[in-house]
Amino acid sequence: MRQCGMARAATIDPAPRLCPGGNRHRAARTFNSRCRSAGDSAIHALTAGPIGAMILGVMSGVTLGDTGRDLTAKRATVAVFVLIDAAAIVRDATSWNMGDAMPLLALSAGCWMVAFGLFEIVYGPMLLTRRLTSQGPP
Image (cartoon, rainbow, N blue to C red):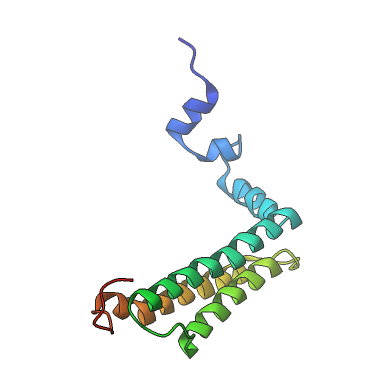
């Protein structure tokens, strides 16, 4: 019985699929060089920046509206959007960096995590408490 090489490699170790020699370091270098290409960076900037900002924008608007609060951005909300935009800009800057991109990727990921964490800290209590007005849901 003959077994397909790809299926066999997937059951034993995922690294051979990335790099036929099984060398994970070489596979990681190949992956990093592909991620730093201009096309991938542009796609990542389009997904990490605007889509992340839209997700946070919709969630903040719905949270404020459904809990009976004014639809105005407080300082913490502005900080959340600045951090998401900074994460996208720093991630895009990794394609301009000819050296090691890992510190910039870590900074971008940190900005992303802090932004969503701050969103959780600010908007979480609003979602866990009663609506401000005595009306029912809109």
